[in-house]
Length: 191
Image 1 (cartoon, helix red, strand yellow):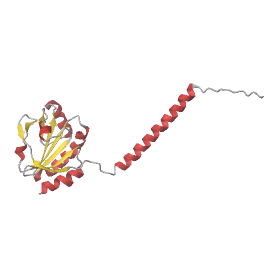
Image 2: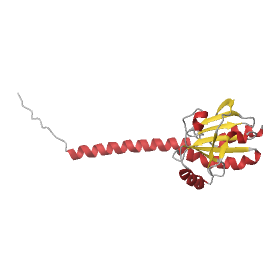
Image 3: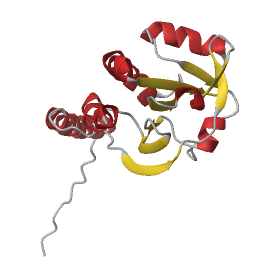
Image 4: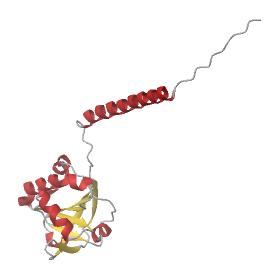
């Protein structure tokens, strides 16, 4: 009977870790390639939030503007009002501000008002934000979340379009695109 010799070869830990690093690198490259391909196709598709059509009376709401003056939604009866609830720390709120400002400038001479209601932040926090974005529409302070309660939302940003008769007709939860402002709000402004 012949005896065979068995040799056990042990792999060094350095070789194991090198192979592990190569494998992890390939996985990372695969993920990055996937993300780049998805981003290139996503840029051609509009994934912005579409408003829900609603119909209810505009709630009563009185707050203060940045100068401390009392202001109310009732002050704007006869105008089309877009009420936007937001906060400085909210990324989609920040993202939509330039779009809202541009839309406001374009339609304010047509009886359109944008009322921007900051949620639970102080004047000292909000004023620098307003200056940074060059906002010219009315900005109100809501330290106690009154607007969120009367509009029955907990989400930021949230927006509501009130027609000239005081009826809430559109509701957005999430950011607003220029395309959707033009498509939905302009119709109400032109009524």
